[in-house]
Length: 145
Image 1 (cartoon, rainbow, N blue to C red):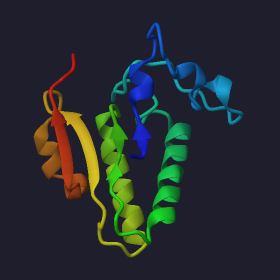
Image 2 (image 1 turned 180 degrees about the horizontal axis):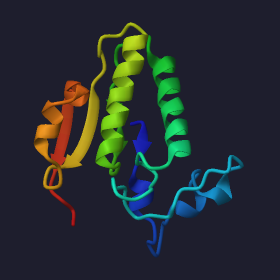
Image 3 (image 1 turned 45 degrees about the horizontal axis):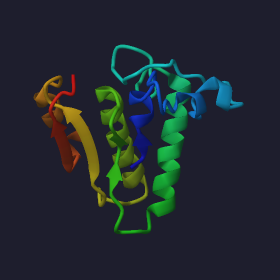
């Protein structure tokens, strides 16, 4: 698992809210990175796992590149983009990034990418018409709302 969305879903909880110690909370880093305190990721608002915060996205991309570089010689690695979160456009971007990085390393999509999404909110045709159609596994779930 490359990213964990649980830390957003617990924000504003009376007990166990991880945001006060999250590394993308400005109080916990010296990089000047601050992500809005949101309860969920979506494509319409700046949030931790979205395309709307370029500084955060650049660091996330660098992290994914570093992970793939570190484990590229292993043939038993599966990439789960995120558990419990991620705006749709951001997930698709990360899947495409994994594919581009592996291709640059001479790997022809040896690794699975797992994407979790509620199909109640997504146009399914989107998955068949772009480069992320190479995603091997998608875990649909019922909307939790």
